[in-house]
Image 1 (tube, rainbow over the protein chains, first blue to last red):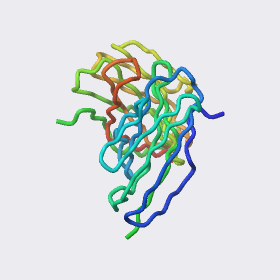
Image 2 (cartoon, helix red, strand yellow; image 1 turned 30 degrees about the horizontal axis):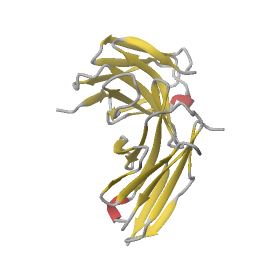
Image 3 (cartoon, helix red, strand yellow; image 1 turned 60 degrees about the vertical axis):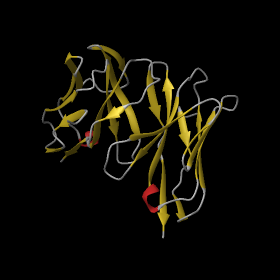
Image 4 (cartoon, rainbow over the protein chains, first blue to last red; image 1 turned 90 degrees about the vertical axis):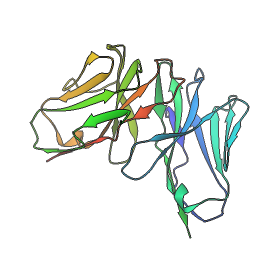
Length: 108
Length: 114
């Protein structure tokens, strides 16, 4: 089983759609979880942390299920500017491990 | 001022050469990292340093040698470059080693080995 595994994608959705990404992790001792966003040919940047109780930031909602060892990201009312690769990140003892990323393209 | 800066941004070189990539962070962070992103876009940890000390050394060929002269700098030297070394190398930093904080990335150094 891969350390951090994500939906393979790509996801192609129309503007205004709701899209959800899932991510599973294998290290049950992981304590910190994040979603990063990476635009084409750019560096990854933090989108949001994921808290145990779930959290929302505008159109973005992140959820954590420790029992099943997965996290999710929901994007509502997709915008063209949401087109990017979304990376699931899980802390791994004393560093962070990245999923392979899910590519999202939002079309007019 | 750029928080994490790495140079050069682009590097094209021949197989067998030796090259270095430099990284500096002005955030006052204790921990710095090198990640490699290959053609399939998978971002993989190579090394991490905490206060100049090596913490993580993943399964990376010993042709790759990191050096941290102080906690604000982490350089990567690569000997005898191979075609498979072609990738984007990202430097990153975080407040501490706990893995609970945000990673701040440099813009990446795109290495092409011919």
